Image (cartoon, rainbow over all chains, first blue to last red; front, side, top):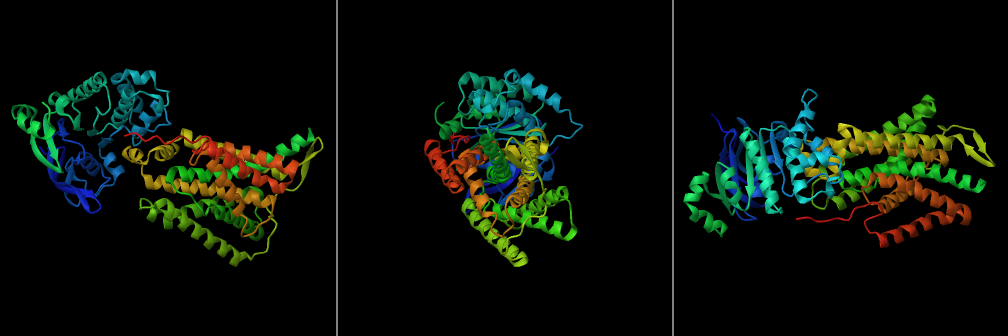
Length: 238
Length: 292
């Protein structure tokens, strides 16, 4: 079986400054890959390259058996690649529900968008209470839920999450990962970027460690724990 | 009482024309992040094309309005396809596009001058006659101007709020990259916005020409006022622009009535300076909060 998403020897970056060097990894159907590593080492750049904001200078991105290198951003959404960007990037003057409905922008008439909305509300009941509120008045955790919920509304094949725990209190991070864990148990595939791997040991089945634009180590969560030295070297702490 | 009615009528008619011009200008600024210096010439063009339709084909007023709308929409589309599209996303886009659209404005103005000459014409697409309210004369044209503008602005408001196409425009204006990540084709949104704003400008031009005359320079003054209105409202705030258009027009009418027409615009500018000292982001603009 071919992988759901795979990058082969990807080189990409801004203008004359390549940020990613020779990045290769794969995500299987139903798999969860975590990209970890310190800030400013190309994790977000990699997600932006996969979602189509940056054109790879070399290498290939394959999604669901197709080469997507040349597809524009909205085409990639159409084929089922969803990117939930860092810091939520909500439509601030729109309500929670309007934001969520934007997530289903490409849904066709026959798709049951109201069922999707109900699924998101079941996952994050708080959003149902706040459905008619403008998102700029929400708490950080609620905004994150809208961001993730908006991504779910597309019924994608894979969701790329850029630092879902960024700026949140530990208790809220717990809630977010609980919801993500539920989605995973339902068979969803993820590519998650985090600076700190502690939450990901349980959630991800593969970890990729990024340093200076290279993937310097990749392996399963168990391997990561057993070779703890590697994580320590790059991320510090314990 | 008569004085009040007179000021109200003048203000509302002026406001309707300003609103048509500034809502489009604001929509373009909000969505594409550019100030369209050619907007005044979109208005001029709408007025002249409607004039030609009336002179050559003898079209009635309703058709004339549609012709002005179509002319405005087409020049908006052409501007996007021939100029804006290639500059979007470039470094210093805001400044470059300012120069490019100013150049386009000069080009259109010269083309109009060459085609029609510099002599001011009266606009034939005009409803003659008037009615009286108390001691005040209200021309039918003023009433039509007001209701056409109101209908169009409410229609645009409804489109933006309730249709998929409108939601895509709002989403793109609020956060372009996030909208693209929802599957919105940003380039088509920009094209639609240019067409919509051009359409409003075309009608605005026709309405303005019924109140004064047709001349190649007729778009300059309304563009300046529309710009002032957009700045006071907060650049890119479409509803604020509509509201401020009426408020500033009423102010201009009041000042014009009591102190003479020549004081209307300077007072408006003075007020703008005061507003911007007090609230640099405009009355309805949001302070830019940078979140990391």
